Image 1 (cartoon, chains in turn green, yellow):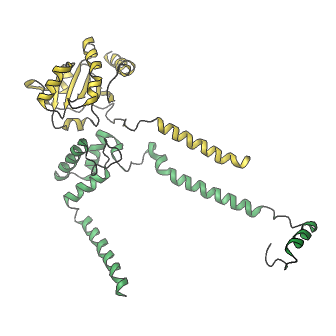
Image 2 (image 1 turned 45 degrees about the vertical axis):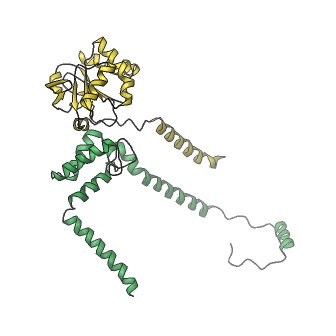
Image 3 (image 1 turned 90 degrees about the vertical axis):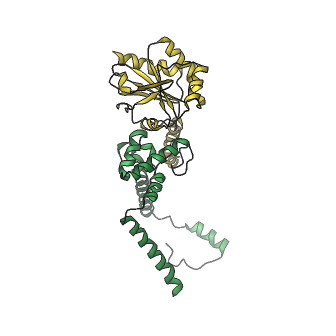
Length: 155
Length: 174
């Protein structure tokens, strides 16, 4: 019982701690880190600002840090960077007409796949049942397999 | 044959998307600054102690702001183009010396020639961030009202100048 309870309790505690952290406003350094992980380095384009060692990334990290310490909100800081570098700096692009396909595409594909599946299943259901064996074929089957039991429950 | 039609159509569509995607250059991030006012700054001028430069000084003129540094390899590639353009004297080029050391920048200009009317010194790269600089060299075409009309990321070439920058500059001067 204890073995089961302990991890459960621990995960609850952790979740609670995280909730608390959010409420008490994340400590500044952690906020800097969080922001850096959401922003893209423009030099090594598949790295976040936090991961990149490019000189520009260092400069941008300094900017983020200064602005966090100056008490600006996360939105203000991301807006500052988007204004200069465009949406490209965000790992999570905003929803707008030009990104609608990106955001909705997967759902459209899913819907299309489901529609296709329903269509195929329906067609299969409505298809006329396979013609039963003719007497000639029946005889052939019995000759090869030997006389069998009548098919039970099989259509 | 008919049942293959749909998968084939989807395949062709996918290939179309991928082909279009491959044509794009991920290095060229469209700048949100084109069409907006050039960020203002006031910086010391290279080799002219005591003097300061602000973009507002160029009000009423169409000009190029070229971001360069002595440590930047591709700046050397575009340098002859800038020198040529400066010699023509049709479009003033102002430099933004980005994250460089004063003596090294001065030595570089002495060695390769100086196409700039002047170079503003952005030693810490802060103005560079305001201009969205991420790959030196970068060049901005700024109009008489101080609005950025074009941004070139990477070295300028004569082809780019003649096909894009100069026609645009000529149109803006009218």
